[in-house]
Length: 122
Image (cartoon, rainbow, N blue to C red):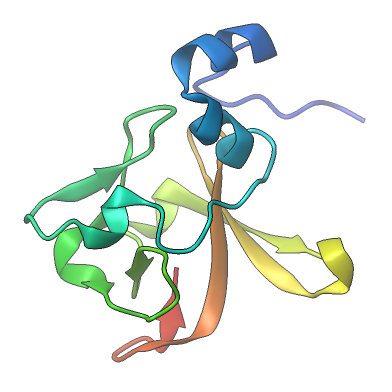
């Protein structure tokens, strides 16, 4: 089976140098930060939220909403071509994982309990 390549790739050692330990655990090892622990959850300035691994714009502030989950939540990505949605059956659940298209970094999951107009929560 061929290994898929991405525009931004690094060795695991390089990723560890580029990302903080928490970013590495989440983005490269599919981890999850503790609810309420992410400073971006409280970010109110206008602008774009970028991938920490490749600087690609992923979400815009005016699509961010308070979901009550403790994580930054958005109704949609900045552009559908900036993310990849993958089926995730880990932990005996059926979910949709969201990854950055450029660096193949884990960003979180997609849920169907979001705000209008999409009803989605990224």
